Image (cartoon, rainbow, N blue to C red; front, side, top):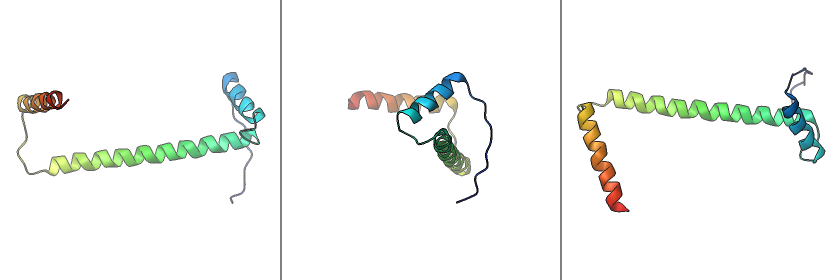
Length: 91
């Protein structure tokens, strides 16, 4: 485990109240534990966000590199309408 470094942070009274209530309820042993858990969650969310962005970028590049002819806006709208009409009929 890495060496811990003590820091000072500023929080709104509401955030601090929630943290203290969580610790008092026994969900966490300390305010530090709450902050560490929040950091782990934040890191996981950032990682998942980055993965989603990378997947979107890959799909965009795949679409750009697609050799099939592009559709005009009118053609795309017509395709979407046909698709949606088919969805309505499927229900």
